Every structure is written in structure tokens, then in C-alpha cells.
Amino acid sequence: STVGVPRETNAGERRVALVPKVVERLCARGVRVVVESGAGLGALIPDASYAEAGAKIGDPWSADVVVKVTPPTAEEIGRLSSGATLIGFLAPLTSPETVTALRDAGVTAFAMESIPRISRAQSMDALSSQATVAGYRAALLAAEHSTRFFPMLTTAAGTVKPATVLVLGVGVAGLQALATAKRLGARTTGYDVRPEVADQVRSVGAQWLDLGIAAVGEGGYARELTEDERAEQQQRLEEAVTGFDAVITTALVPGRRAPTLVTAQAVEGMRPGSVVVDLAGESGGNCELTEPGEVAVRHDVTIVSPLNLPATMPEHASELYARNVLALLELMLDDAGTVAPDWTDEILATSCVTRTEGDG
Ligand code: NAD
Figure 1 (cartoon, rainbow, N blue to C red):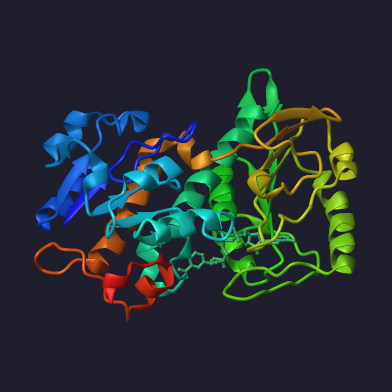
Figure 2 (cartoon, protein in one colour):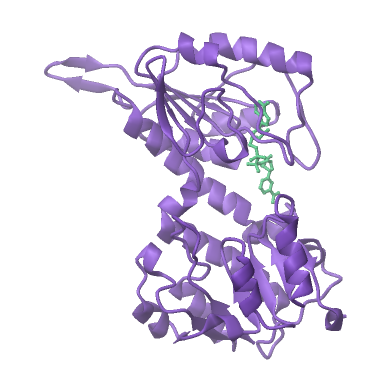
């Protein structure tokens, strides 16, 4: 097979679906790789590095397998050949029209966000790899926008106390935010509605905040809170957040609007100069005063709502993503380096969102 790697065209997108190291691995498996000129530029990876790794620089769209990061535009779908395979984030739940267009174009498509979260698929879990990047960057943003030091300092001018950081929603991103804030010297605390997270929070040197509300849903995710639970949670968090220099929120419930954890009143109760970094902006935000994509100061508290954080650290975000894609491709490759999916494989059957007739 030939794998094509287009240049990503979404505004602000700096990632690329394959990095040279992974191109090398694919070439060793007998796969040809065609990379669009400039595909790696956002991540500062020059064409020459891809060429050295064994790729051809050329038109990626005529390949029989095209790998992307973000969902294809209608124009891009038009450039795929009928019978081709596409792999990438496709947002099948929020943009079903993309899947319909791919089906109409005769394309077999695999959505990276639909890979089941089972042990065998961990190496392909791009949601987790990109959430790791987002969590790390969130802690850096909190430090960057803080009016205070994160670490404890003993200086000739006196001592500075370490910052206190609270992370609300400790999934993959939250755990990385806790670990990163800790490395910067902050005192860290984590909170979630899944009680099993407590041990993971402690394992990264953070305290566990228990508000007595458990909401475990299906597949390791949280469920949406009832109205009463929500009111209680907001009330308790209003009291809890007052003591923190920075609050990082990452709470999501699959298929729902992000829960409001930090109310306007809670922000008002925070010490002036504190920071809220809301990672849930794309799903409506966890803070009532969040303006997605903006940095706003409300009640003397800086509220930061970054969008597409993984794209702000493009080299490593791309490298982890490329390894996820490689693991998925390896599951489909036969000995001759041809993509030949075994449709009885749970991972392939679940992540495939549309499939051409000829594919069995
Ligand atoms: P996510 O992005 O869906 O949500 C982030 C966090 O927000 C979750 O921990 C969730 O419990 C929490 N949350 C939701 N509503 C909340 C509320 N009202 N208040 C406080 N917190 C709230 O989660 P994720 O990072 O995708 O991870 C979800 C789970 O999936 C975790 O248990 C993770 O370990 C698991 N997981 C498993 C695999 C695997 O087995 N392959 C891979 C990745 C993640």
C-alpha cells in the first residue's frame, strides 16, 4: 500500500499525522509513504527529514491510505479516490455529515476517537495521547498566567509560599496537569466524581478532594449528575476553590455539554490574581465565565480557555499521534505491506465508521 500524509489546513493546526521516525518504520514494513510538501512545517519538521526517512514528497491524496489529524474538508474528501482508506480524527458523533460524505465518496474510514478503550488498543489511543499533551500545556498556561510563582522560593528578599493548584476532573489530561504542576513546585489537589481516581491522584503527589458525590458511568467514564447533585457540587466547589491560586478544569461527559463546576460566584470568591484554566471550552466550558478561545479577567481572576492545546506543542503531539496511527496500521498490514483489515477484529470493526462494499 501507499500511505499519503497531507498538510493539515485547519486554522492553527500545527500537527501532522506521521513523523519521520514513524515513516521509517512503515517503509521497513514495505509500505510506500508520500508526504505533501510542507506537511511537517507547522511542527518544524522539514520535507528533507521525511525524504531521509524514505518518504516521497508529492501528492498524498492519490494514495490508497490517507492519514490525517483533523477531519477532512468537503474539498479534501473530493480528492480521495473511491476505494481509498482514511484514518484520522473524524468527529463522527458531532459531525455525522463528514461520515456521510466519506461514505458517498466510497471511502473506508477509521475514526481515531472511536478506537475502543481496551488494553489491547492502548497503543492506538489518540484521545489519551493528545489529552496528555493538553494536560501538560494546561499546567504551563496556569503558571504563565499566574501573577505568582508556582514553586516555593527562599530568597534574600524573603520567602515565597508555593502555589496551590486544584484540578477538577482527573482523567488523562487532569492527571498530567497535576503531575506537571507538581514538577513546577506547586502544591496540588485533584477532584473527580469517579472515586477510583483517588489513588491515581495520590500517585502523582497530589491530595484528593472528596466532596462525597460519586457519579460513575459506563466504560470508565463519568455519568451526568442529577440536578440536585449538580447544585450540591457547585455549592461545595464554591467553598473549595477559594483557597487555590490556580484551578484547572478538564471535566467531560461523553456526548453531553461539559458540566459547570466553577460558577460565576465561585470565581468571585477566589483571591484576586488567581487563574482558571478551562480545558472544556470546546464543549461549553466547566467555568460559567469561560469564553472559549479567550483570556478574560473577571472579578480580578484570569480565566483562560485554550482551544486545541495539542497543536501548541506540535512535534511531540504529532509524534505520539503518529505512533497511535502506526499501531492501528500495523493491525491492518499483511506481510506484503498491504492494508487488509480483518473485520472480525474488535478494534477495526469499532473504529471503522464507514466501509466500501468491496471490503467484504
Ligand atoms: P474525559 O475526558 O471524558 O473526562 C475527564 C474527567 O472529568 C473524567 O475523569 C471524568 O470522571 C471527570 N468528570 C466528568 N464529570 C465530572 C463532574 N461533574 N465533576 C468532576 N469530574 C467530572 O475522561 P478521560 O480522560 O477520557 O478518561 C476517562 C476514563 O477512561 C479514565 O478512567 C481513564 O483511565 C479511562 N481510560 C482508559 C483507557 C484504556 O483502558 N485504554 C484509555 C484512556 C482512558
